[in-house]
Figure: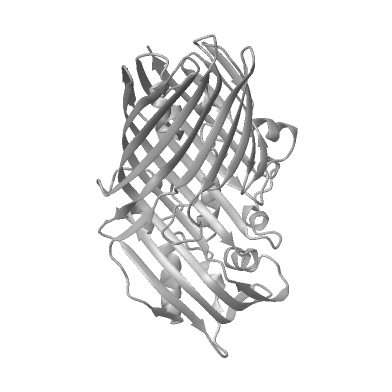
Length: 447
């Protein structure tokens, strides 16, 4: 189990990490397909007639326990740091790759086609005492007893999938001062691989007897679900890269509106604001090794479950096999095929021309479903403010954000023509410890 939890944190290898993808550049005055990713109505605001996306990449991790300084400080006791304190552990790891894409304008209309691949891995509300007992059994050579009561559904989950998006936007109102556009994106989903372990309504007693860790007087409701390569091994990065393996088996929609208060200079605006609902949909996993099973864990009397057995587990299926062998699980009817909901969010933003080429963008992201649900891909809530200096060819900006999981972050980024490079947390990492880090880059052509 150590490998499982450690990999979720190190999934992105040598890349750096964060949580709001393309923070700062996705609300750039140089409107393109990235802007349409947070609001499809922006597609009608393309500066040129055509837009070609070559390649964009963003890698993210956020948590509420371990700081960037901990990673660089030479301390390799990751599990010990992650399960410190009494606050439940939360972590979100994301990779988003935007592949070839094309958009064009025809009078009041704009159309686009895009491709993307996505990876998400999460730890949601994991009880630190329970997590420490399972991953670090015997690390403290002492005798301890803990009574645990955790009603929330604790989850370890990971998934990958691919998307092909078709976008359409139209200008619906236009005067000398004001302009309104509306748009939608229809995404065809290709589920790749999935794994979920959920533990809800947990109560029990954990005893550490000089390294022998056991669970007694316990009750919990469990869910084990997996499909594709993640069923066999949760610690191999290649198992997350089967983005289109499941074929076309899902659909989602993004819907948005955009408002501009125009400036005298036609290349600028006073305010550019938008509101969008994204990721309304789900996908169905149908691999040959599919399994989604609910169990009831029941340990009574003098019976005890040896938690040291989980230390070498490399997959969620390994954990399930250990529990089945123990004889303490009561099985409920299982499903061969199962549906997973995308992380539906409501997002809004306003980019204000402060003076000359100086702008400031406020952005808010609010999830619409609960991360604790076993069939839900997790996402965190975000509020950010991004001051920027923007001309037609050059742009520099500093995203400042408050993230639900990792707290405050400050980043920096720039754009030269169609090339951009940035981070949502580079500045906060330099001036002090931060619970997240991120990096992104990309290149697109507009003409």
